[in-house]
Amino acid sequence: MRNRSAGEHINLARNRTHRRTTRLGVAAGLVALSATVLGAAGASATGSAAPQSRQIASSVLGGDHKITLTALRSAEDEYAASVRLQVYERTGGAWKETDRVTVGDVDGWFWYPLTGSGAVCAFSTASTEPAPLTVSLLLTPSLGCSDPAHYLVKEGRVLAA
Image: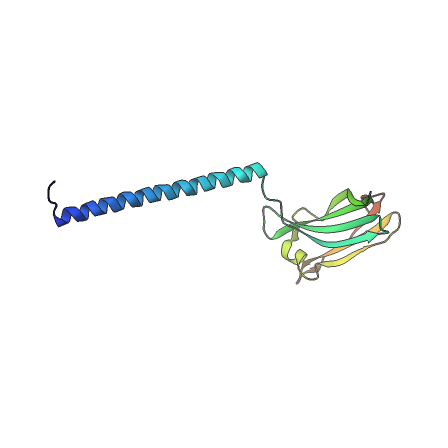
């Protein structure tokens, strides 16, 4: 075995450190890559995440019909939202959806005003057949409320008034 100079010892130490660092870097890269692949596979296996939603109003009519308004956050624009009006009928002790419509345009509302304080300017109905329904929602605090949208709920179906 030969004697090495101090310079050779430093170079050997650098080479060992470089190999160790390279191996750790490769290992970390493989871990990150597999996490990415598994995450992508999990996302595609389960589909994309459901859009964020928040119920903003609800009314029960005569105990056998329920009407709800739900804000649905846009998948394309974090500030936009749609509003879904749903009608339910109590069947066998459970609520079953009988109809749904979009209030206004799809993604035609702003998410934050819809889910904040004072979002519902008007939400009125009556337990008659057909049941008149009026909806007015906050556009923005500075713009105020939307024009009222009028509907009729007849036999569990939503009709334009």
